[in-house]
Amino acid sequence: MSKYCFGVDLGGTTVKMGLFTTDGTVVDKWEIPTRKKNNGEQILPDIAASVSAKIAETKIDRTDIAGVGIGVPGPVDQAGVIYKAANLGWGVFNVAETLSSLCGGLTVKAGNDANVAALGEMWKGGGQGHRDLVAVTLGTGVGGGIIINGEILTGATGAGGEIGHIHVEDQETDTCGCGNRGCLEQYASATGIVRLAGRRLAQDTKDSVLRSGEITAKTVFDAVKAGDELAMEIAEQFGEYLGKALASIACVVNPEIIVIGGGVSKAGPVLLEYVRKYYVPYAFHGSRNAEFALATLGNDAGIYGAAKLVMED
Amino acid sequence: MSKYCFGVDLGGTTVKMGLFTTDGTVVDKWEIPTRKKNNGEQILPDIAASVSAKIAETKIDRTDIAGVGIGVPGPVDQAGVIYKAANLGWGVFNVAETLSSLCGGLTVKAGNDANVAALGEMWKGGGQGHRDLVAVTLGTGVGGGIIINGEILTGATGAGGEIGHIHVEDQETDTCGCGNRGCLEQYASATGIVRLAGRRLAQDTKDSVLRSGEITAKTVFDAVKAGDELAMEIAEQFGEYLGKALASIACVVNPEIIVIGGGVSKAGPVLLEYVRKYYVPYAFHGSRNAEFALATLGNDAGIYGAAKLVMED
Image 1 (tube, rainbow over the protein chains, first blue to last red):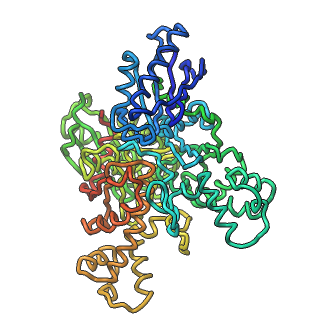
Image 2: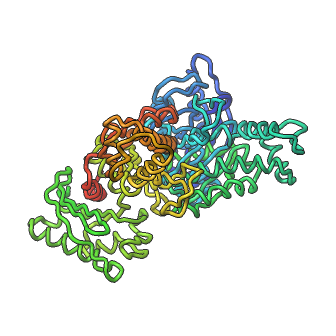
């Protein structure tokens, strides 16, 4: 039985890396820069070199290493093929095979970063102890990852769990980054909440602390906690969009638990309350009792999930 | 390697049964009545007796039988436990274990009937050759089954694929069978289409062949094919509800193919056209190219899928 595994979370600026024991303890955690020049051709060699250096430094026997898991910012299929990662300059190629040969034949598995983070939250985060899980990351955008029976739902072309692009609003006039209009991401992301706030503030002159200073998802939820009525109206809108969308998702995958993370989720339990308020009445009865939890691993969810990718179940 | 398997589709009135070779050829196909008295206590013994009789009749060696798969009208979890099947009188118990001991220890696997039918369509029907599939059954209600990497998405409590209860309409005043309002089933089922037609006809006095005679999903789509404008408006509404819902589902599971079956699908390719017309613009680009196909196994999808449940992959 292997004793160690590496988890790699490849981002547009830095690569987060972790060495884990197979029971999920972090032995070491470090970062290297993401060198994107020449269409990102140095990225995987840099990661392989860093893995090698860590093996040398820790004097771990290579036969004790289960493998290297990697989360990548783009759609990755079951075989480890990425279909373009625009912000790395990458085209279509097999990430898992390429990194494996750079790592001298170590087992490598690759997944989409949001999906891999969901796996991390299942393994050691807010979804621990569950095997059917929906993870939502509310950051600049809305990311998602679906775990079914302990495994990532990858989908036909690696686009499984792209729940930020569920259509939730017919009346939207702005275009989403994906090219459609009325995507969940346009209302439930950090930028989406700011948009909702801007629209609400423009509606009338109702008093609110949000009328002075910069508006962010954080200031909106801080105002909610301070009892600001207008901010609470915005939180209701946010909760309705996200809660209804999660009820639809639950009709499809019937999760045990829904884990909400990302920067917006730092608002804490009050955020879950606004979401559950709309989830429950719109959910199918078979999924109505799904638990809600906040993500707990923060920026480390990616390395945990990546490490889990290469572990025996 | 086993040579045969049984597929059982347990319905409220009759039990459909099939004996298959493991390559998917039907050796024999028959039905027995569903005896529901005393909370359905005779149903599984009747099925076991019928399996035994068929083994005796065909002189198949029991060691050549991979097992018995069964689709059941209610939520069934991964372990084979059913959580109530109201129209059989059944409570909570392990269907797979119970039937296995009644069948002298043959391997038995159980699934929800709609999910099992989806597996059948993947194996030998409209979704043949695919492993990531969404199946929709448009009958009295709207049933669904999701197949991920060749396996049924069961979900935490057996309510995976319950796509008929996705909320699609905020303005609905009628209550769905599930207790919610505005479920997909209220618009895209046979009865849903009749409701849409009734509402459209009541709107004005526009001429239509639908103003005389009984209105059914069939008469609506027959009128569409005959160029009836009002019927085409109804088909647009149907297509918009179902196409948009499928676009949301595809954001979650990223299928290769969407297979549409059930009585309503007898309308044929024209039905797929109305659905795709709304699917494509609302789909996330990663799932936009999913194929659409009509189911081909009709009422036999259940016995095919049930047989597939007990087959090695």
